[in-house]
Image 1 (cartoon, rainbow, N blue to C red):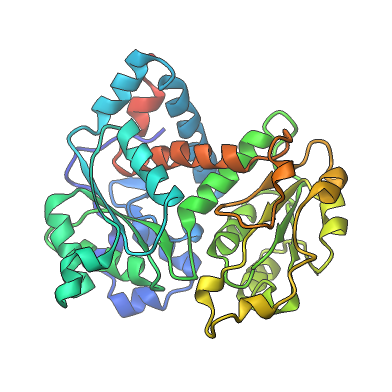
Image 2: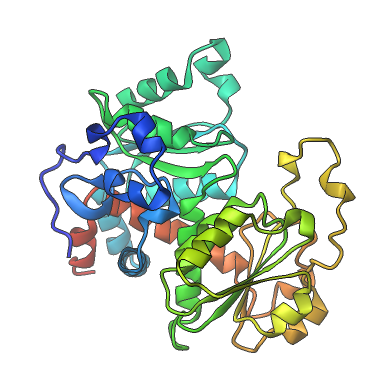
Length: 368
């Protein structure tokens, strides 16, 4: 059980290392620098999937379950809203988003945080030439947490270091950074899997298939890593060769002794899978206009025939938004988890925010 220390003393360990040295560390070696100095094992900044081991994942899942139970009653909901009523969160989304933005916003509202937002850099002083560093420092003057989504790789990491080494250190949650990481999406994906299989033996000995644009999908990159925390979870990557999962993801699986396979046969993979994680084509990252449209993706769509092949206890997931990679005929099948997945995101993000501010004990121990 985490014991809350006195408020105002929380700080990440990023003050003890220069940015270049931190930037060049292997991802797993960055975790200690991102923890709360006074709450070991709890994130201060949430930037990468490598911060989460199985113990922390299960702890946050338990906290999310508790929050959603407390919130069922009016009295419980009011209790939760009082926990962080003295805190403010800035949602700085310079990359388009609706689900991720609204999910974090709803999570803040559950806990009573006052929120502000910038959803287009053109509406901020960056349009006048202000640096991102100065924008972030400005936001930190008014808010106690920054939740940021950016198309720029590594920006959340850089801003976390800058704030940690300022006279107003506040936590940053990475809500998507370039093509590299999307840790809170991976959290809600794991939470969905844990809930889907909690009465069916858990995640041990499962097979999870990823299908679609695996080269540029940051949700796949982050979730693939988180799944390595669970025993004997085999990963199958189904994609056109042009969009197949990158080598750095496979290198991690090899290093951890995780069984995996590459395939271009979705139906075969579906028949052998406990979970199928579909993704859309990420053509916003095209270097040349129409580049993605020239790739034949017709075999990488989930429809009625694939649904027939999915085991009866299997699940279909998707980070959304979708295009045509999952047919709408699948939507009412009880194995379709993508809408539930979205709602789960609100609860697990509320758990992460509460833990970041040191309120885990208050939630787990309350009488509601």
